[in-house]
Length: 425
Image (cartoon, rainbow, N blue to C red):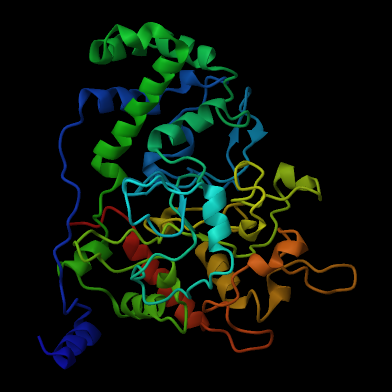
C-alpha cells in the first residue's frame, strides 16, 4: 500500500495501514504442576497472618497488580504493616531476561563477568538516548532485566519466594515454617507424586518445588500474558483507534514530545512478538518522596533501587543509585498506584510529573523553608547526576514550554487505555 494512502486511512478511519501477525503464546490446559501452583497462588494459609496470598497483592481482577489505591500494601504477622514498595504487576513477565549489565557476551563458552566487573566496564560509556520505540541495534551498557523494582530476582520462582519471608508481606520466619504449612495444605503429597520422595528430603526442597509450581502457573496461564488489548487488535488490523487514541499513539512515539516509547517499546519485534511496552532497563527519574510511607518517616532513609537497601550486591556501584526497573505499560490504566514509592495515584499526575519535573519543579516537589522547590528530594543530593535529564521530555530546562499540552496528555491517556487486556472480540 502506498505510504500516502496508508496515512490517509490511518488519519480518517483509525485503521493500521500496515497490519502485522503477532506471535502470541499458545493457549493450552494447565499442566499438573501449574495447577498446583494455581492453588498455592491463592492460598492465604501460607502467610503468617493467614489472610494474605500471592493474589492478595497481585489480583487477577486488577491485571495481577494491587487491588486498591494504597501506596503500598499491608502485610506482616498481623496484616497491619506497610510494605516497602507497591507490588508491580505479574503480567507479561514470561519474556523477562535475567538481570545483567551491558550486552550479551559474544562467546557463550566464556563465563560472563561479575556484576561488579560489568558495572565497572560500563562506567564512562555514554548512555544512548532513548527514542524510536524499538529496541536499539546494539544493547547499551546499562542495567536490564530481572524482577522486582530492583531486579534482584532472576526467575519467577525466586520472585515468588521473596514475599514468603518478607517481614512486611507474608512474614514467614523460616523455610521450615513454610514447609510445615505446605505439608498441612496437602501440597507435599501432590508434589511427591510429581517429583518422587526427594521432595520430602528437607524443607528447602519442598519450598523450592512449591515455588516452581507457582512460576509454572504464571508461565502457562494465558491470563498472565493475554495480548488481547485493543492495541493488539489494531496492530493486526482488527480494530480502529479513535482520533484521540491515534493522536495519543503518535505522541507516545514522538521522540521530541512525550517520548514514552523510548523506554516503553511500542512496536512488535522483527520476530512478530507483541511489544511488552518496556525495554526492561533501569532509570533514575527523580520522582518526589512519598511522605506517607512509614520507612520515609526517617529523613536519613532512602530507597535507592539498584544500590540498596533491599538489593545489596550493587551497593558500591553508586552510578546506579536511584535507578528502578521500567515496568510494562500494559494494563497501566487499570492501576491505581504508580512508581516504586507509590507517590502518584492516577495517570494525570504521572503525566504531569514527566511534563513539569524540570520546567516547573514547584508544581512537583515540596518547598524548603526558603520557598525553593526540593528537587529530586527522594534521592541523596550526591546522586542527582544519575537522574535522566537527556531524554525527552526531561531535556527541557526551567521555564521552557512544556513538551505536552493538556490536550496532548488527555490523548496519551486515551491511548494508554487501549493497552488494557480484555478488548471485546
